[in-house]
Image (cartoon, rainbow, N blue to C red; front, side, top):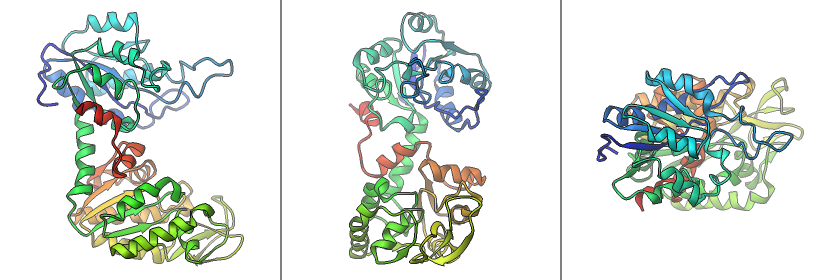
Length: 401
């Protein structure tokens, strides 16, 4: 991006302003907006005008009862006051994503001005990667910058198709996208060792590709969350009513065998916080993870597991964390995730490089006020997961074509 001369040019910038709004349309977490500011400010400071493209939610899938799009609920108009405040300048708003008004407003845009177009997903062609739609957007600007890492794994009109209408040298990643890719590559290709990956979440099936890829290059693999019980049951453990994917038991067994074969230390939680129902007011106790009685379910890692996991994390030089250790949204089952977040922060303080990626683990470090105590927090859950799995992300590939 630093190689592009923005003077007197209009830059079409795909950002990820898919932020949570409360019932009064107030932004409850502006992380994604703040993450895009360095790119926007750089273009403005270097004599360019900025045309912003973003989606917000899934308006096509969450239509009103009469079948129409809920343009109020999903309008980017709600973002404008806060964005103006963050940029310290007026942000103009176009009430349509594409069309005559968008053409008029962009035509009169002067250097130093910012225009936000309406939600890209109001156009059905957006998620289909429609070429006509992408071409219309490309005609609004001289340069295309993609800074929406969170949607880089989607082959949408505004994230990948549009890039083909810009020549090399007139399209690039923004600073956030550059940072996401550089930090992920640091873990994948240039890690200081030992390298420990912590993988949590409910299902093995959601993380199969990630786990298989990790076994090729990590030293330690710590498994928490609901997925741990599929592994434990595959070894003959009794897991009571814990979440188990019966159709993945063989796969779990194979992954454990692959870890052994490759010399990767794969650690399952020795004990669990178990509950008699899936509820914050359930009765709870601690039990060995392979001896959970019938009628009880594991909802968090226990104190022995925390100690073993934290010890390995503290001895690591590179740490990758994707997914929570338990049902951390419920207070009685949040201790494991909290303890892991604190261990990752402590290891980072001692010089380790830590990357936290994936919606729930990101939410956890933020909730605990530890986001600035780790090396890098990814803004793209699904995109980061696919990048780490070794997949080609359409939004990145399109910039290199």
